[in-house]
Image (cartoon, rainbow, N blue to C red; front, side, top):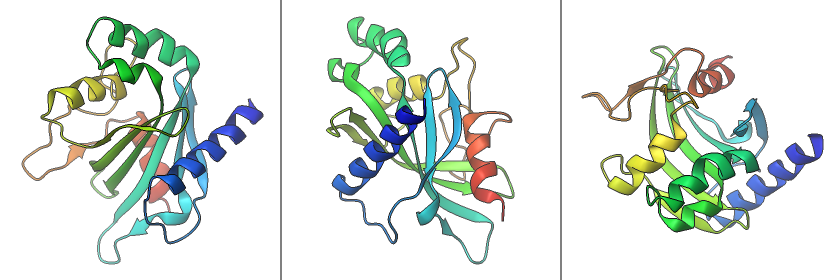
Length: 177
């Protein structure tokens, strides 16, 4: 397991460097959650904190497990629910803005990579059909329940963070002083 985590850190660091994202500091990936679906990390070194409000911007990501890819993603590529190239999805990275005081979040960017660091899909448009399928994968538990919240934003552009979700674990990790 330790070797897997170390390999994951290395993979995320290389992908971050190759993706052309501007960094202030070298990334410092920290695990904030693990489960059967993968390892979830955030970049502690490059968190941007708003000086006037309790709001942070943070890159987070997931190293998807082989079992998750085999059992969840690949069947959806075979039945046409997801584009065929998504069968190779191995790493998900998000740029998120978190409102610590109100327990809400916004996603700015999502980047999906294969295990070789090739970008499969980049951007974020919750109304585009391709993204709706990706979001369904990312934000649903195995039993079909929503892990975070509904995909649509409210009128202000924010979504609630569901208690005891991956998003809640991330909020706790980055919002504590």
